[in-house]
Image (cartoon, rainbow, N blue to C red; front, side, top):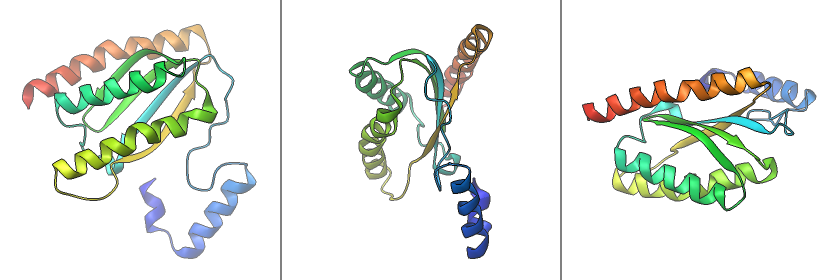
Length: 159
């Protein structure tokens, strides 16, 4: 992702043209499977900076995620929020609304956190999604959550 910045203008144009030929968006991750029941959604902070760096911010983000997605009938089955990214295992995702909903969540949080830190600039990167392909894949994605939550709790205790 960050390699793009190092490309020449010609290389950037060629790369975007190749993406468009494949039917991908020019600058964001493709979302080729939009009819699965379950998805693992991952969103990272810009340049992987630890912007979700307090228990209060993690809880604030979680509250916003649940509030916005539950109102759309989306179920959040499992989640992990770490200092520089988060994962959501979701059911009933409406892809036409997903990007818009994440913007509604991320935009106000970015503004607030930038004000709190007396800074400007991007807070979030684009999300990526992975369709859950089988029952085994579902349980593998879900089994990861308690292990990562334990790490997240440990990081909070270190703060």
